Amino acid sequence: MGKRVIGVCIFIIFIASSLSALEITYEGKVQLVQKEGFFIGFPRGFVVTEDDFIVVCDIRASDFKIFNQEGKALSVFGRKGYGPDEFADPWLHDYKNGKLLISDTSTKKLYIYSVDKDLKFQQTKQTIVTSVMDAKLIDEKDMVLIARMPIKDSPSPTAYVLFVLDITRGSRDHLVPFELQLGENEKPVDFDKLKKTNPSDFPDWMILPPWKYCDYSGDNVYFVWAANLDIIKIDLTTKAHTRFSRKTEKYIQPKVSREFKKAYNEHNSKEYRGWVQKMSWVCKVFADSDMVGIVYTNFDNKTSRWNSFLQIYDHNGTFLKEAPLENFSSTSERPNLYYDRNKKILYCLSEESIGTEGVYTVYKYRLR
Image (cartoon, rainbow, N blue to C red; front, top):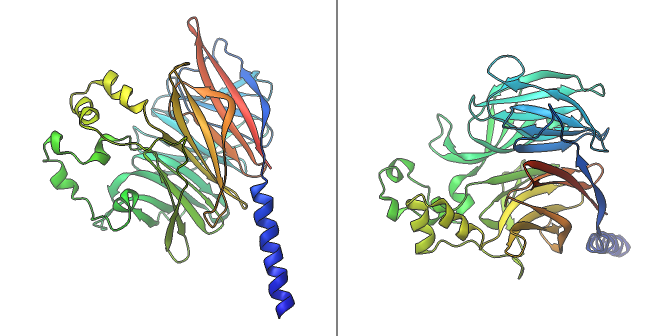
């Protein structure tokens, strides 16, 4: 018995030491060729397939532009509209096992498309989901994990921001009520009463950006709000949750000052953006069988661009490492990121303007 305990302890120590020695390696970049028919207007999600095809959702054109690993333009799928294979406000959320997960904000639709090696797209699933902010394919269970704005699903009286959708049956397993996003022991929000509240009395969370992010590994789900580096871990079997985070010296906790709220209430976008640029914003959570990753951004006044920082935790919530994503920066506090859990590669899409043209570059980081 004693030898078994010692053996288990040695194994745990080995795993812990392996994770703590994890390296974040920059492996280069590829610039996406911009030419007639392939100019990216405004990217809203991108993925990289196992065949190294780069699929970029262009919300301005309401289509999906595909490039190879050298950045060469290959083909375009979809167009603006409301018919078959047409989209109004598309958002590409995830890719797994030959399947793309897409939401359309205006039509409140969620799609699953299959895509093969010949880049042929075919819709396989469609359902109605409102206000999707992030979503992941739980392909092995034919389910979708969805983070969204706080909405009440009848007959539930509670507004949830995270749930699992059975894409075949249409049933929903609610996981995170909105008040849990704000902290432990918070009272449920009376949204009907809030609608009648004077803007000067709005709670702080209304002033802060609403973006939410999610991912899963095995039976564990991870959720985070952009305005607070505080990861909520939920066990899909028991529904029990725990929290973990490490707010390092690089991380600047978002806070709402009187001036910040004033800029929000007066719709002063320039002043509001100025306050946003003084704080850190979480823009990604991802997970695989070994670890949980968080990306947050800080504004660099010298370059007028946002720099990204990557944190790594184990599944128990132990903080392992933080490092800047070298060479990568973006014009937004919410850059487009995609994590390939099989290859353990984080892809980051950078954008910049040279003259009147936009330049889009994919940066690649391996975690090992």
